[in-house]
Image (tube, rainbow, N blue to C red; front, side, top):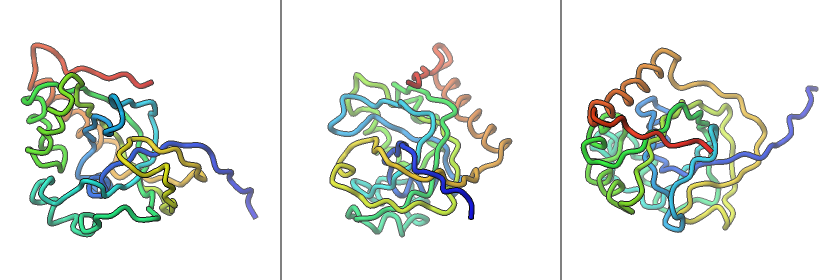
Length: 203
């Protein structure tokens, strides 16, 4: 028998189940964040983290039509379950900050959020930029079950978890991911050529 791999402290970022499904399908590599209702702003203290699926606030009409049809199973769940499955692990490769609608419009092809809802996120807390996380997603094999405690629930971004280091497999190959990440950066630069899109720090 092999040695047991101990559980280690880690972080999980809460994200809509439909968005996680799109990332695991290779349909998007970005997440648009401004933080939970109880948070003053969104912080990104980790370069690597798991994605914890949440069903709070996600509704079909908030996604682009194609995603509504594709991710029906994720959208059908409207209550937070007592147990979730952690099937995605992220490695952050770039972080951009967006403050203008034209920048947001430029990256519309790169995510499944509907344009009206994306604009709402941009306008919410207008003194804070919208954080665009570019992340390489890996499938966790096998997925990790997680029992949701009261402290994990609610509108918050980060949840501490302990897990046994999982095996990971990148959703997109090196060349494909690099091309997608470059396309996001280029789209933002073209949208605001006079001033390069801001870059948030990784703390």
